Length: 367
Image 1 (cartoon, rainbow, N blue to C red):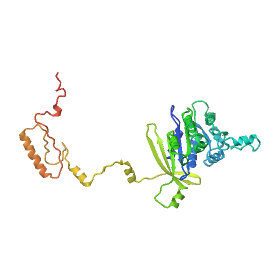
Image 2: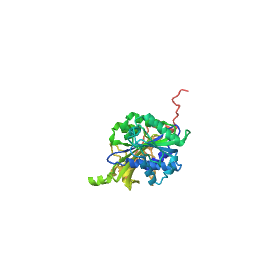
Image 3: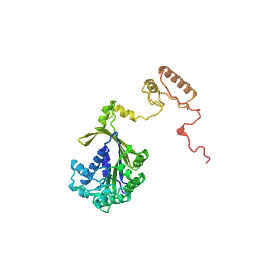
Image 4: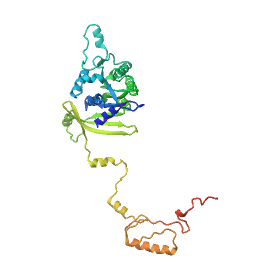
């Protein structure tokens, strides 16, 4: 299911639509948000480098980790770092987020900060100026794909770090401007949801076409030490995808961490659990008892041939009194023979009443 999220980011948005967006939420109970973020980033990078994505490049905005970690991550995933200059740009908001090192360098206190040579890195001097940050992201993206109709993707490794330096409304405005830009194909970000109030989390999820929640693994084992140990090795990945028709697709997977690599596995549901989930939750009983099923099977429906040797006689309301009495005696005898069986009998209001099939629909009109 995590691969399905990556494919949606790969396919991007249609012309005239806002860019596809993904919010990745984690918490201290399951701190694997950065691992999931790196998985999505490397998957999308693989699609872009092989020309299988709508976007032709990706701009990575780093707030929580050095660009050198990104270079190492790409190497471990088997992606050519030397060829990343053609499709990857890194906006470094981690090394000097407030421009202090730059001012110390101007006064000769420190030397020029080192940057990752294997990647195309641009250092942001002040992350509080989001208008300049927006312009830098667009400049780096257009440097990859040009000013035509080609598109690029944007990845932000921590909105939590952004909100430390500026307001929630400013960050939301930045994301909205990126989503509505014609050359942005997709955008995704990481949020440590337990460090923010519900209002902030709801605002970012509202702006997203997909929401992924990293949660601790649920287990029937109640041992606290066992659950604590498992929470740092395994977890659950819950994702909801908003479709174009307004429906929401909900997915759930388990994941495990092995040698700094994340592996997703499907959760097997039992047949009884699936059947139970399909029954709507109502306040009345939808099931029939054995007696109710038996009584329902005994009901003789009108005009139903019972495949018996005796002919079925049905009173249609137009026979004479003689036939009616004969028919009543026949019905009475049948009731005695078939005691315990339900029966539906239709009587017309009068013998003078015409059948419905013979009625003139315009009979009440004075023509």
